[in-house]
Length: 358
Image: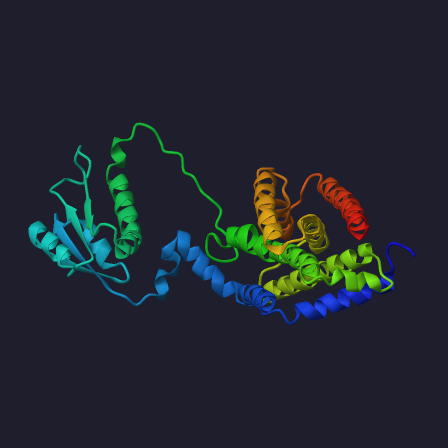
Protein backbone atom coordinates (compact mmCIF):
# COMPACT_ATOMS: atom_id res chain seq x y z
CA UNK A 1 0.00 0.00 0.00
CA UNK A 2 1.25 3.48 -0.77
CA UNK A 3 2.60 5.41 2.21
CA UNK A 4 0.16 8.29 1.74
CA UNK A 5 -3.35 8.12 0.32
CA UNK A 6 -5.19 11.35 -0.36
CA UNK A 7 -8.64 9.99 0.57
CA UNK A 8 -7.34 8.57 3.83
CA UNK A 9 -5.65 11.87 4.68
CA UNK A 10 -8.95 13.69 4.09
CA UNK A 11 -10.84 11.32 6.38
CA UNK A 12 -8.30 11.66 9.21
CA UNK A 13 -8.15 15.42 8.78
CA UNK A 14 -11.94 15.67 8.90
CA UNK A 15 -12.06 13.55 12.06
CA UNK A 16 -9.47 15.69 13.86
CA UNK A 17 -11.07 18.97 12.77
CA UNK A 18 -14.38 17.71 14.13
CA UNK A 19 -12.70 16.88 17.44
CA UNK A 20 -11.00 20.28 17.57
CA UNK A 21 -14.29 22.09 17.07
CA UNK A 22 -15.43 20.67 20.42
CA UNK A 23 -12.34 21.85 22.34
CA UNK A 24 -13.34 24.93 24.37
CA UNK A 25 -9.75 26.06 24.86
CA UNK A 26 -9.10 26.16 21.12
CA UNK A 27 -12.37 27.95 20.41
CA UNK A 28 -11.59 30.57 23.07
CA UNK A 29 -8.09 31.14 21.65
CA UNK A 30 -9.53 31.69 18.16
CA UNK A 31 -12.28 33.96 19.50
CA UNK A 32 -9.66 36.04 21.32
CA UNK A 33 -7.75 36.57 18.08
CA UNK A 34 -11.05 37.34 16.35
CA UNK A 35 -11.80 40.02 18.94
CA UNK A 36 -8.38 41.63 18.42
CA UNK A 37 -8.82 41.66 14.64
CA UNK A 38 -12.41 42.96 14.75
CA UNK A 39 -11.67 45.82 17.13
CA UNK A 40 -8.13 46.62 16.01
CA UNK A 41 -8.86 50.32 15.43
CA UNK A 42 -10.21 50.66 18.96
CA UNK A 43 -7.29 48.72 20.45
CA UNK A 44 -4.78 50.97 18.69
CA UNK A 45 -5.93 53.91 20.78
CA UNK A 46 -5.16 52.00 23.96
CA UNK A 47 -1.82 50.71 22.67
CA UNK A 48 -0.74 54.19 21.61
CA UNK A 49 -1.63 55.60 25.02
CA UNK A 50 0.94 53.25 26.57
CA UNK A 51 3.82 55.27 25.15
CA UNK A 52 2.15 58.68 24.66
CA UNK A 53 -0.84 59.33 26.98
CA UNK A 54 -1.21 62.85 25.57
CA UNK A 55 -2.74 61.38 22.41
CA UNK A 56 -5.89 60.45 24.31
CA UNK A 57 -5.91 63.47 26.60
CA UNK A 58 -8.64 65.19 24.63
CA UNK A 59 -11.07 62.46 25.69
CA UNK A 60 -10.51 63.01 29.42
CA UNK A 61 -12.83 65.24 31.46
CA UNK A 62 -10.81 65.13 34.71
CA UNK A 63 -9.64 68.46 36.14
CA UNK A 64 -6.21 68.41 37.81
CA UNK A 65 -5.52 71.05 40.47
CA UNK A 66 -2.03 72.56 40.18
CA UNK A 67 -0.51 74.89 42.79
CA UNK A 68 1.62 77.69 41.32
CA UNK A 69 4.22 79.33 43.56
CA UNK A 70 6.85 81.95 42.77
CA UNK A 71 7.26 84.47 40.01
CA UNK A 72 4.19 85.47 38.03
CA UNK A 73 5.82 84.66 34.70
CA UNK A 74 4.09 83.83 31.38
CA UNK A 75 4.29 80.17 32.40
CA UNK A 76 1.27 80.64 34.64
CA UNK A 77 -0.84 81.87 31.74
CA UNK A 78 0.34 78.95 29.62
CA UNK A 79 -0.72 76.54 32.34
CA UNK A 80 -4.09 78.27 32.62
CA UNK A 81 -4.60 77.67 28.91
CA UNK A 82 -4.08 73.90 29.19
CA UNK A 83 -7.12 71.66 29.10
CA UNK A 84 -7.83 69.61 32.25
CA UNK A 85 -5.60 71.86 34.40
CA UNK A 86 -6.76 74.39 36.99
CA UNK A 87 -4.09 76.63 38.52
CA UNK A 88 -4.19 77.93 42.11
CA UNK A 89 -1.63 80.63 43.10
CA UNK A 90 -0.11 79.85 46.54
CA UNK A 91 2.95 80.37 48.68
CA UNK A 92 5.47 77.57 48.36
CA UNK A 93 5.01 76.30 51.92
CA UNK A 94 1.23 76.35 51.57
CA UNK A 95 1.46 74.59 48.21
CA UNK A 96 3.70 71.80 49.58
CA UNK A 97 1.33 71.29 52.50
CA UNK A 98 -1.61 71.04 50.09
CA UNK A 99 0.29 68.50 48.01
CA UNK A 100 0.97 66.33 51.08
CA UNK A 101 -2.73 66.41 51.90
CA UNK A 102 -3.56 65.51 48.26
CA UNK A 103 -5.54 68.72 47.81
CA UNK A 104 -3.50 69.47 44.69
CA UNK A 105 -1.95 67.07 42.18
CA UNK A 106 1.35 68.94 41.76
CA UNK A 107 3.22 72.13 42.65
CA UNK A 108 5.05 74.30 40.11
CA UNK A 109 7.63 76.58 41.71
CA UNK A 110 9.35 79.35 39.72
CA UNK A 111 12.02 81.21 41.73
CA UNK A 112 12.75 84.92 41.08
CA UNK A 113 14.51 85.20 37.74
CA UNK A 114 14.76 87.43 34.70
CA UNK A 115 13.68 85.80 31.42
CA UNK A 116 16.16 88.06 29.62
CA UNK A 117 18.88 87.68 32.25
CA UNK A 118 22.16 85.78 31.98
CA UNK A 119 21.18 83.06 34.45
CA UNK A 120 19.16 79.99 33.49
CA UNK A 121 15.48 79.91 34.45
CA UNK A 122 14.93 77.04 36.87
CA UNK A 123 11.47 75.57 37.35
CA UNK A 124 10.81 72.98 40.05
CA UNK A 125 7.93 70.53 39.83
CA UNK A 126 6.78 68.80 43.02
CA UNK A 127 4.67 65.65 42.69
CA UNK A 128 3.76 62.68 44.87
CA UNK A 129 6.41 59.96 44.63
CA UNK A 130 5.44 56.61 43.07
CA UNK A 131 1.97 57.83 42.17
CA UNK A 132 0.22 57.05 38.89
CA UNK A 133 -1.36 60.51 38.83
CA UNK A 134 2.14 62.05 38.87
CA UNK A 135 2.93 60.40 35.54
CA UNK A 136 -0.26 61.84 34.07
CA UNK A 137 0.56 65.30 35.42
CA UNK A 138 4.02 65.19 33.83
CA UNK A 139 2.39 64.58 30.46
CA UNK A 140 -0.21 67.31 31.00
CA UNK A 141 2.42 69.93 31.92
CA UNK A 142 4.86 68.94 29.20
CA UNK A 143 3.21 70.98 26.44
CA UNK A 144 3.10 74.18 28.52
CA UNK A 145 6.73 73.79 29.63
CA UNK A 146 7.91 73.21 26.06
CA UNK A 147 6.01 76.28 24.87
CA UNK A 148 7.53 78.37 27.67
CA UNK A 149 10.99 77.08 26.74
CA UNK A 150 10.43 78.24 23.16
CA UNK A 151 9.45 81.68 24.43
CA UNK A 152 12.65 81.90 26.47
CA UNK A 153 14.70 80.87 23.45
CA UNK A 154 13.08 83.61 21.41
CA UNK A 155 13.69 86.22 24.13
CA UNK A 156 17.36 85.27 24.38
CA UNK A 157 17.91 84.76 20.66
CA UNK A 158 19.84 88.05 20.47
CA UNK A 159 22.79 86.42 22.24
CA UNK A 160 23.33 83.87 19.47
CA UNK A 161 26.52 84.29 17.47
CA UNK A 162 25.45 81.79 14.80
CA UNK A 163 22.20 81.19 12.97
CA UNK A 164 20.49 77.99 14.17
CA UNK A 165 19.75 75.29 11.63
CA UNK A 166 16.01 74.75 11.26
CA UNK A 167 14.93 71.12 11.15
CA UNK A 168 11.59 70.25 9.59
CA UNK A 169 10.17 66.76 9.83
CA UNK A 170 7.37 65.48 7.59
CA UNK A 171 4.05 65.02 9.32
CA UNK A 172 2.83 61.48 9.79
CA UNK A 173 -0.17 60.45 7.77
CA UNK A 174 -2.95 58.07 8.56
CA UNK A 175 -3.62 58.82 12.22
CA UNK A 176 -1.83 59.74 15.39
CA UNK A 177 1.92 59.22 15.77
CA UNK A 178 2.86 55.64 16.50
CA UNK A 179 -0.15 54.03 14.82
CA UNK A 180 2.00 52.94 11.90
CA UNK A 181 4.50 51.19 14.18
CA UNK A 182 1.79 49.47 16.21
CA UNK A 183 -0.18 48.30 13.18
CA UNK A 184 2.60 46.90 11.03
CA UNK A 185 5.29 46.27 13.64
CA UNK A 186 3.16 44.63 16.34
CA UNK A 187 -0.51 44.04 15.58
CA UNK A 188 -0.24 42.51 12.11
CA UNK A 189 2.64 40.06 12.86
CA UNK A 190 0.96 39.10 16.14
CA UNK A 191 -2.32 38.23 14.44
CA UNK A 192 -0.80 36.44 11.45
CA UNK A 193 1.71 34.29 13.35
CA UNK A 194 -0.45 33.46 16.36
CA UNK A 195 -2.37 30.77 14.41
CA UNK A 196 0.98 29.10 13.67
CA UNK A 197 1.82 28.84 17.37
CA UNK A 198 -1.67 27.57 18.23
CA UNK A 199 -1.61 24.96 15.43
CA UNK A 200 1.89 23.80 16.41
CA UNK A 201 0.69 23.20 19.97
CA UNK A 202 -2.41 21.43 18.64
CA UNK A 203 -0.45 18.90 16.60
CA UNK A 204 1.41 17.82 19.73
CA UNK A 205 -1.88 17.19 21.53
CA UNK A 206 -3.35 15.31 18.57
CA UNK A 207 -0.36 12.98 18.31
CA UNK A 208 0.36 12.39 21.99
CA UNK A 209 -3.28 11.76 22.93
CA UNK A 210 -3.32 8.80 20.54
CA UNK A 211 -0.43 7.27 22.50
CA UNK A 212 -1.87 8.17 25.91
CA UNK A 213 -5.33 6.79 25.06
CA UNK A 214 -3.78 3.80 23.23
CA UNK A 215 -5.88 4.43 20.14
CA UNK A 216 -3.05 4.13 17.60
CA UNK A 217 -3.43 0.35 17.59
CA UNK A 218 -7.09 0.77 16.63
CA UNK A 219 -6.23 3.21 13.85
CA UNK A 220 -3.47 0.99 12.47
CA UNK A 221 -5.77 -2.04 12.47
CA UNK A 222 -7.64 -0.27 9.68
CA UNK A 223 -6.11 -0.07 6.17
CA UNK A 224 -4.10 3.06 6.99
CA UNK A 225 -0.41 3.62 7.59
CA UNK A 226 1.23 5.47 10.44
CA UNK A 227 2.41 8.11 7.98
CA UNK A 228 -1.16 8.74 6.82
CA UNK A 229 -2.35 9.11 10.39
CA UNK A 230 0.38 11.64 11.24
CA UNK A 231 0.08 13.63 8.02
CA UNK A 232 -3.70 13.72 8.32
CA UNK A 233 -3.29 15.39 11.71
CA UNK A 234 -0.67 17.77 10.33
CA UNK A 235 -3.02 18.85 7.53
CA UNK A 236 -5.86 19.33 10.03
CA UNK A 237 -3.71 21.78 11.98
CA UNK A 238 -2.19 23.43 8.92
CA UNK A 239 -5.53 24.16 7.23
CA UNK A 240 -6.51 26.33 10.21
CA UNK A 241 -3.66 28.76 9.49
CA UNK A 242 -4.79 30.24 6.13
CA UNK A 243 -8.40 30.28 7.33
CA UNK A 244 -7.55 32.30 10.43
CA UNK A 245 -4.89 34.49 8.80
CA UNK A 246 -7.20 35.28 5.87
CA UNK A 247 -10.04 36.17 8.23
CA UNK A 248 -7.76 38.41 10.31
CA UNK A 249 -6.50 40.25 7.22
CA UNK A 250 -10.08 40.77 5.99
CA UNK A 251 -11.13 42.17 9.37
CA UNK A 252 -8.09 44.45 9.49
CA UNK A 253 -8.98 45.82 6.07
CA UNK A 254 -12.55 46.42 7.23
CA UNK A 255 -11.03 48.40 10.12
CA UNK A 256 -9.26 50.65 7.61
CA UNK A 257 -5.83 48.97 7.88
CA UNK A 258 -4.56 48.11 4.38
CA UNK A 259 -2.37 45.06 3.86
CA UNK A 260 -0.15 45.30 0.77
CA UNK A 261 1.61 42.48 -1.12
CA UNK A 262 -0.91 39.96 0.16
CA UNK A 263 0.40 36.87 -1.74
CA UNK A 264 3.93 37.32 -0.38
CA UNK A 265 2.64 38.03 3.12
CA UNK A 266 0.56 34.84 3.08
CA UNK A 267 3.52 32.94 1.65
CA UNK A 268 5.69 33.91 4.61
CA UNK A 269 2.92 33.05 7.06
CA UNK A 270 2.20 29.65 5.51
CA UNK A 271 5.85 28.58 5.24
CA UNK A 272 6.67 29.72 8.77
CA UNK A 273 3.54 28.05 10.13
CA UNK A 274 4.31 24.78 8.36
CA UNK A 275 7.81 24.73 9.83
CA UNK A 276 6.46 25.27 13.34
CA UNK A 277 3.75 22.62 12.92
CA UNK A 278 6.29 20.09 11.62
CA UNK A 279 8.58 20.80 14.57
CA UNK A 280 5.61 20.21 16.87
CA UNK A 281 4.73 16.94 15.12
CA UNK A 282 8.31 15.71 15.34
CA UNK A 283 8.38 16.56 19.04
CA UNK A 284 5.12 14.68 19.66
CA UNK A 285 6.32 11.60 17.79
CA UNK A 286 9.57 11.54 19.73
CA UNK A 287 8.27 12.04 23.29
CA UNK A 288 4.75 10.55 22.96
CA UNK A 289 3.70 12.25 26.23
CA UNK A 290 1.75 15.51 26.18
CA UNK A 291 3.23 17.41 29.12
CA UNK A 292 6.86 16.59 28.36
CA UNK A 293 6.42 17.24 24.64
CA UNK A 294 4.73 20.61 25.23
CA UNK A 295 7.46 21.73 27.64
CA UNK A 296 10.26 20.73 25.28
CA UNK A 297 8.47 22.30 22.32
CA UNK A 298 7.86 25.55 24.20
CA UNK A 299 11.53 25.82 25.18
CA UNK A 300 12.61 25.00 21.64
CA UNK A 301 10.28 27.64 20.19
CA UNK A 302 11.56 30.28 22.62
CA UNK A 303 15.16 29.55 21.63
CA UNK A 304 14.21 29.44 17.95
CA UNK A 305 12.35 32.77 18.19
CA UNK A 306 15.31 34.44 19.91
CA UNK A 307 17.65 33.23 17.19
CA UNK A 308 15.25 34.17 14.37
CA UNK A 309 14.46 37.62 15.78
CA UNK A 310 18.18 38.35 16.02
CA UNK A 311 18.35 38.05 12.22
CA UNK A 312 17.42 41.31 10.42
CA UNK A 313 15.57 39.44 7.66
CA UNK A 314 13.38 37.34 9.96
CA UNK A 315 9.82 36.48 8.82
CA UNK A 316 8.13 38.86 11.28
CA UNK A 317 10.21 41.77 9.99
CA UNK A 318 9.62 40.74 6.39
CA UNK A 319 5.84 40.54 6.88
CA UNK A 320 5.80 43.98 8.53
CA UNK A 321 7.74 45.52 5.62
CA UNK A 322 5.75 43.78 2.89
CA UNK A 323 2.35 44.49 4.45
CA UNK A 324 3.18 48.18 4.69
CA UNK A 325 3.98 48.29 0.97
CA UNK A 326 7.77 48.06 1.15
CA UNK A 327 10.11 45.75 -0.70
CA UNK A 328 12.37 43.10 0.80
CA UNK A 329 15.67 42.27 -0.90
CA UNK A 330 16.08 38.55 -1.47
CA UNK A 331 12.52 37.77 -0.41
CA UNK A 332 12.33 34.79 -2.75
CA UNK A 333 15.48 33.28 -1.28
CA UNK A 334 14.06 33.54 2.26
CA UNK A 335 10.92 31.69 1.19
CA UNK A 336 13.03 29.01 -0.49
CA UNK A 337 15.06 28.51 2.69
CA UNK A 338 11.85 28.13 4.67
CA UNK A 339 10.50 25.64 2.12
CA UNK A 340 13.77 23.67 2.27
CA UNK A 341 13.51 23.49 6.06
CA UNK A 342 9.92 22.26 5.73
CA UNK A 343 11.01 19.52 3.30
CA UNK A 344 13.77 18.32 5.63
CA UNK A 345 11.36 18.24 8.57
CA UNK A 346 8.81 16.36 6.44
CA UNK A 347 11.37 13.66 5.65
CA UNK A 348 12.25 13.40 9.33
CA UNK A 349 8.57 13.04 10.29
CA UNK A 350 7.98 10.36 7.67
CA UNK A 351 10.92 8.36 9.00
CA UNK A 352 9.76 8.78 12.58
CA UNK A 353 6.27 7.63 11.63
CA UNK A 354 7.68 4.55 9.91
CA UNK A 355 9.80 3.68 12.97
CA UNK A 356 6.81 4.18 15.25
CA UNK A 357 4.73 1.82 13.10
CA UNK A 358 7.48 -0.76 13.10
